[in-house]
Image (tube, rainbow over all chains, first blue to last red; front, side, top):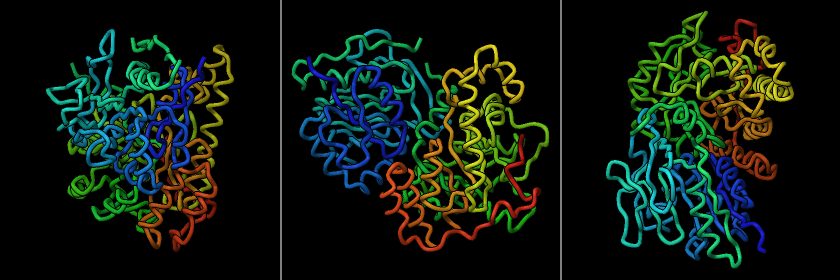
Length: 202
Length: 294
């Protein structure tokens, strides 16, 4: 029997608390990450939604850019949501071979929610909440697109790095976080994540 | 099928602002300074509250031209203020696609009886509150975010503390009540029963709660976070100080690291002079903005 995995949630700014709640519901231990020291010993990482400019500046201020690059480059499984997707792209941390187009859907008045089929997520569609959301304008061959809206990639995967343009933490549907925990589980011998990522949205 | 302007989409933007600082700005240059300092949003207005106090007169919605220039200058969300009850100012702000409308007591109220029916709008609203009843009435009218009012333009934190302690204290009190006691509590607070019930069950507001009104230093921001604010609005405190860019960065840093006094101390060093302040207890009742709205 192996203990619960320790998942870090970047807590510079944004809705990190909501991600922490989902992860605890799925049986993980959660640590808010604000400094380099907080990265020590993590089994996985979530970069939450928030304001990508504020988060970028905060990551720089804390000296987190290189440590995050190294940790993710060394295989730390990561889920980036909305601003988190932007952090993972070529122009920010540069760990995923994707290029995000910020606020691509427009200002808040164009924010929306929709049912979305996400490749790798079993069962009914994911209720995806897009808030001043980006999309993925370009991606390399190593990147698998998991979902699209109007022909634009809004979810993608490259190895154990998962990026979604929407907020899966606001709906009570934990299945996208389940993808992260599955990736974490593959790296911890003897650990099996909770298999029932229930869809509580309806 | 896309669903726009659902309550989840409206309140969701406030969720993304959490742990951040929303700064009052009056020009595109100030907006850029705020963005570069790490603000999670800016509030575009014609005069900061300290100047509204000094100059007097009717304070109105800002010139849409000025708001458009700020929207051009930054990529972070741009909020703007409408007068209490002035739904046409709000329609104008919606037409130019601001990201959030603040129906604000800092401007001169346009309607002494009614707030704006905020359900009718696609753009979300934030409203001020001094107590739980006021907060829940605003939510009942469709507000998707609440800020404690404090006393804007003073640089005196005492009212922000009073309002935040009152709101969080009243939330705790509601959570301790039995189902049978909630209708009377709703009546006493003058708040919709359904929302009172939701607060009692979850022991928290159904929307994000920020604080505003009187924050002038990094320690002020950290204090408000410690008292239960999920983020802070800083009005005159930044651009009425001696070194706005440095102070703005420091308040952002203290808001992230509010639990770590050493980090708040580091952020507080060498900021230059704070804004010129007014002691709240020396204000005449008619000078207090927090009593506007009900």
